[in-house]
Length: 343
Ligand SMILES: NC(=O)c1ccc[n+]([C@@H]2O[C@H](COP(=O)([O-])OP(=O)(O)OC[C@H]3O[C@@H](n4cnc5c(N)ncnc54)[C@H](O)[C@@H]3O)[C@@H](O)[C@H]2O)c1
Image 1 (tube, rainbow, N blue to C red):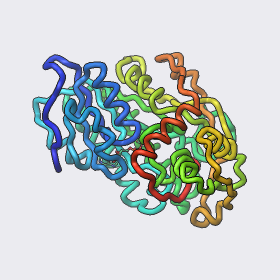
Image 2 (spheres, rainbow, N blue to C red):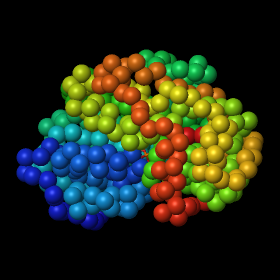
Image 3 (cartoon, rainbow, N blue to C red):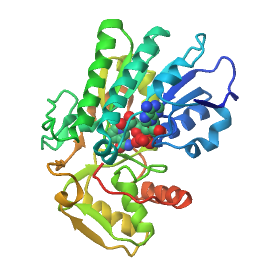
């Protein structure tokens, strides 16, 4: 375990935040946002899907601990006190979950419990966890609200292990609130996209952007009429901070994302148009893209009434802007070959 930076640019009285998974796509934007506000930030990340370059602009201003969440927490001094915790570390992406389900399941349950145990033993600061729209499972009802029933596929279909693990995380969070009054906040992220996201674990937008930048064929799985709502990560992080700091969000579940659907075919066309690419689009049947029995979902759109009422939430980044900014980070990082997905 390496401690890359012990230098803190903030004052002694600054608010202190802990971000697990802070070297990832969403976590690094959150870290930057908090530092800009004058909050002292500690990041724990094992750099499995995140990278230290994501934290480059603020590396001298944060404390970075490289390693798994549970080991990173154990390494913290007893007298350190956090005012808020954001638990974003997880095994993320369809490809990762299908390729190594044991690690993904263990990471997504065990590390979340380690965070709650730590928070409970260290002053019970508000603790926000990243859940996922995946927990809604496979009903085709179009719009999903937080109190809806969840419907998963059979346990023999590996993709559902991610949804099960995130649902267990939610149960744990609610149990820590109900039994110990640990103020937990659960965020069900719908498709969150933007600069620093990578396509190699199956995320659809970076995968399309990588292909479009090389004028290579964009591979759309299924018939392309399935739809998702894409929200820029930079819109999401401001709401995360408001939620963790709002006592009325404790012990509650919130959808977070955009409620403007776009089909995956339209998304591919928009990427090509926005980047002025000469790429073609090819439809790939699900049976050629995924293991037998893989189930994709037709439509996913969040009901955002609850988050709007609690902290106000109005995404501002137009999708074209997100695509352009993502293309800049992919171009500067160099692209990595990927397989696919609709996330
Ligand atoms: N981006 C989305 O569309 C989306 C949708 C639903 C849920 N989420 C959730 O949001 C969170 C952040 O996702 P992201 O898109 O930024 O992905 P990401 O892969 O960029 O970030 C996850 C980070 O966690 C780190 N990590 C993984 N396992 C770890 C471990 N055991 N110990 C320490 N660090 C570990 C990774 O290195 C990475 O930096 C995740 O919990 C994810 O499940 C994201």
